[in-house]
Length: 157
Image (cartoon, rainbow, N blue to C red; front, side):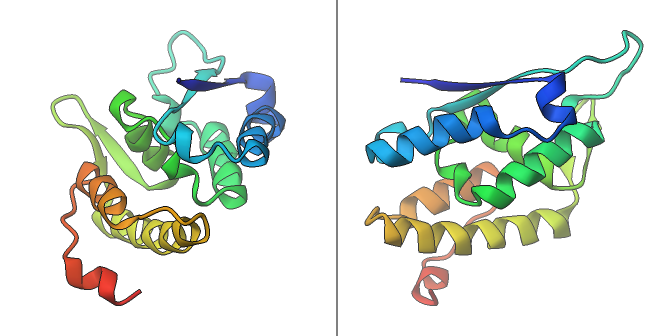
Protein backbone atom coordinates (compact mmCIF):
# COMPACT_ATOMS: atom_id res chain seq x y z
CA UNK A 1 0.00 0.00 0.00
CA UNK A 2 1.49 3.30 -1.08
CA UNK A 3 1.72 6.12 1.43
CA UNK A 4 1.70 9.68 0.12
CA UNK A 5 2.89 12.75 1.96
CA UNK A 6 1.43 15.87 0.36
CA UNK A 7 3.38 19.10 0.57
CA UNK A 8 2.32 22.57 -0.43
CA UNK A 9 4.02 25.92 -0.80
CA UNK A 10 3.12 27.06 2.73
CA UNK A 11 4.43 23.95 4.47
CA UNK A 12 7.65 24.12 2.47
CA UNK A 13 8.23 27.84 2.97
CA UNK A 14 7.64 27.59 6.73
CA UNK A 15 9.66 24.35 7.07
CA UNK A 16 6.55 22.72 8.53
CA UNK A 17 7.17 19.00 8.82
CA UNK A 18 3.90 18.24 10.61
CA UNK A 19 2.27 16.38 7.70
CA UNK A 20 5.30 14.13 7.27
CA UNK A 21 5.76 13.68 11.01
CA UNK A 22 2.14 12.54 11.44
CA UNK A 23 2.50 9.90 8.75
CA UNK A 24 5.93 8.63 9.80
CA UNK A 25 5.26 8.63 13.54
CA UNK A 26 2.03 6.69 12.96
CA UNK A 27 4.03 3.99 11.18
CA UNK A 28 6.54 3.90 14.00
CA UNK A 29 3.84 3.65 16.69
CA UNK A 30 2.05 0.88 14.83
CA UNK A 31 5.32 -0.99 14.40
CA UNK A 32 4.47 -1.10 10.71
CA UNK A 33 7.68 0.30 9.29
CA UNK A 34 8.79 -2.98 7.69
CA UNK A 35 5.46 -3.48 5.93
CA UNK A 36 5.81 -0.03 4.31
CA UNK A 37 9.31 -0.54 2.96
CA UNK A 38 9.62 1.29 -0.38
CA UNK A 39 6.02 2.52 -0.23
CA UNK A 40 6.43 6.24 0.54
CA UNK A 41 5.92 8.95 -2.05
CA UNK A 42 5.90 12.72 -1.87
CA UNK A 43 3.34 14.77 -3.72
CA UNK A 44 4.74 18.29 -4.00
CA UNK A 45 2.57 21.22 -4.99
CA UNK A 46 4.94 24.17 -4.93
CA UNK A 47 3.94 27.43 -6.61
CA UNK A 48 6.32 28.66 -9.27
CA UNK A 49 6.12 31.44 -11.79
CA UNK A 50 5.03 30.09 -15.19
CA UNK A 51 8.38 31.01 -16.73
CA UNK A 52 10.45 29.45 -13.92
CA UNK A 53 12.30 26.55 -15.58
CA UNK A 54 13.67 25.04 -12.37
CA UNK A 55 12.90 21.51 -11.30
CA UNK A 56 11.78 21.11 -7.67
CA UNK A 57 15.22 19.92 -6.44
CA UNK A 58 16.67 23.17 -7.82
CA UNK A 59 14.48 25.36 -5.61
CA UNK A 60 16.30 26.25 -2.38
CA UNK A 61 13.14 26.33 -0.24
CA UNK A 62 12.14 22.83 -1.35
CA UNK A 63 15.64 21.49 -0.76
CA UNK A 64 15.75 23.07 2.69
CA UNK A 65 12.48 21.36 3.66
CA UNK A 66 13.93 17.99 2.65
CA UNK A 67 17.19 18.70 4.48
CA UNK A 68 15.16 19.36 7.63
CA UNK A 69 13.15 16.16 7.13
CA UNK A 70 16.32 14.15 6.57
CA UNK A 71 17.84 15.55 9.76
CA UNK A 72 14.81 14.31 11.69
CA UNK A 73 14.52 10.91 9.95
CA UNK A 74 17.95 10.08 8.50
CA UNK A 75 16.77 6.50 7.82
CA UNK A 76 13.78 7.62 5.71
CA UNK A 77 15.30 6.16 2.54
CA UNK A 78 14.05 2.79 3.80
CA UNK A 79 10.47 3.90 3.18
CA UNK A 80 10.92 5.66 -0.17
CA UNK A 81 9.27 4.13 -3.24
CA UNK A 82 12.35 3.42 -5.35
CA UNK A 83 10.31 2.21 -8.33
CA UNK A 84 8.49 5.53 -8.51
CA UNK A 85 11.82 7.41 -8.53
CA UNK A 86 11.52 8.70 -4.97
CA UNK A 87 15.06 7.66 -3.98
CA UNK A 88 16.59 9.52 -6.92
CA UNK A 89 14.45 12.61 -6.28
CA UNK A 90 15.18 12.52 -2.53
CA UNK A 91 18.91 12.29 -3.25
CA UNK A 92 18.58 15.24 -5.63
CA UNK A 93 17.09 17.26 -2.77
CA UNK A 94 20.18 16.60 -0.64
CA UNK A 95 23.08 16.21 -3.08
CA UNK A 96 24.44 18.93 -5.39
CA UNK A 97 23.64 18.08 -9.00
CA UNK A 98 22.85 19.37 -12.46
CA UNK A 99 20.09 18.44 -14.87
CA UNK A 100 20.89 17.25 -18.34
CA UNK A 101 18.18 17.01 -20.99
CA UNK A 102 19.88 13.89 -22.34
CA UNK A 103 21.06 12.18 -19.14
CA UNK A 104 18.69 13.45 -16.44
CA UNK A 105 20.14 14.13 -13.00
CA UNK A 106 23.93 14.34 -12.86
CA UNK A 107 25.04 14.31 -9.22
CA UNK A 108 28.28 15.80 -8.02
CA UNK A 109 30.26 12.52 -7.73
CA UNK A 110 32.04 13.30 -4.47
CA UNK A 111 28.89 14.64 -2.83
CA UNK A 112 26.92 11.57 -3.92
CA UNK A 113 29.59 9.27 -2.52
CA UNK A 114 29.52 11.09 0.83
CA UNK A 115 25.70 10.99 0.86
CA UNK A 116 25.68 7.27 0.08
CA UNK A 117 28.27 6.37 2.72
CA UNK A 118 26.44 8.44 5.33
CA UNK A 119 23.17 6.69 4.50
CA UNK A 120 24.85 3.28 4.59
CA UNK A 121 26.10 3.92 8.12
CA UNK A 122 22.80 5.39 9.29
CA UNK A 123 20.69 2.66 7.73
CA UNK A 124 22.96 -0.16 8.90
CA UNK A 125 22.56 0.96 12.51
CA UNK A 126 18.83 1.64 12.14
CA UNK A 127 18.10 -1.67 10.42
CA UNK A 128 20.00 -3.53 13.14
CA UNK A 129 17.94 -1.74 15.81
CA UNK A 130 14.78 -2.80 13.97
CA UNK A 131 16.06 -6.39 13.58
CA UNK A 132 15.75 -6.10 9.81
CA UNK A 133 18.38 -7.74 7.57
CA UNK A 134 20.03 -4.95 5.65
CA UNK A 135 22.89 -6.00 3.40
CA UNK A 136 20.87 -6.74 0.25
CA UNK A 137 18.62 -3.73 0.85
CA UNK A 138 21.61 -1.43 1.11
CA UNK A 139 23.26 -2.95 -1.94
CA UNK A 140 20.08 -2.36 -3.95
CA UNK A 141 19.89 1.24 -2.78
CA UNK A 142 23.52 1.82 -3.76
CA UNK A 143 22.95 0.25 -7.20
CA UNK A 144 20.14 2.70 -7.91
CA UNK A 145 22.61 5.50 -7.25
CA UNK A 146 25.25 3.89 -9.49
CA UNK A 147 27.43 2.10 -6.93
CA UNK A 148 28.35 -1.54 -6.45
CA UNK A 149 29.09 -2.37 -2.83
CA UNK A 150 31.57 -5.12 -2.08
CA UNK A 151 30.58 -7.67 0.56
CA UNK A 152 33.78 -6.87 2.45
CA UNK A 153 32.44 -3.39 3.21
CA UNK A 154 29.67 -4.90 5.33
CA UNK A 155 32.18 -6.88 7.37
CA UNK A 156 33.61 -3.57 8.55
CA UNK A 157 30.40 -2.51 10.25
